[in-house]
Image (cartoon, rainbow, N blue to C red; front, side):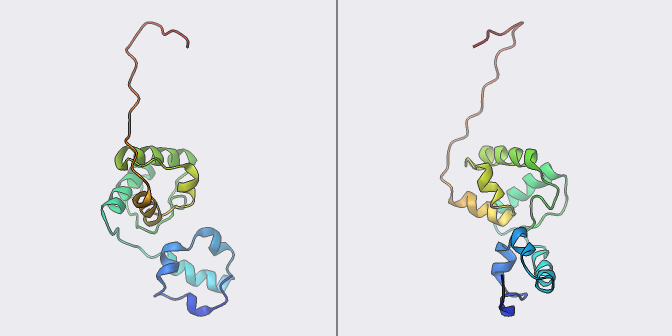
Length: 138
């Protein structure tokens, strides 16, 4: 719990970038409201990865305005959409993310940082089987 009121102010970058919804739920109401105001600021993307992630989120979530510190689930994301996000990240950035990693990094900024720190892994697409009247069971 945040006992020091100096931690919660408009200049605190930590709160703007790292405070999760779960942490907000544990704050007293007066501090929680103040943090919500900070947390809901619109943040522009800072680099190519963040810009590309915003494009992906816009396609998946059908939302026009997405900032770098917006939460995936608060914008309407759900578990199946999250799987699509993981797949697109693998295809575009050549990083294989786990569901747990993405659940723990639900903003564009956090996800971009995760992608920057992951080792690249070449994406390989599954080839389509040729069209047949029937297929043998393996």
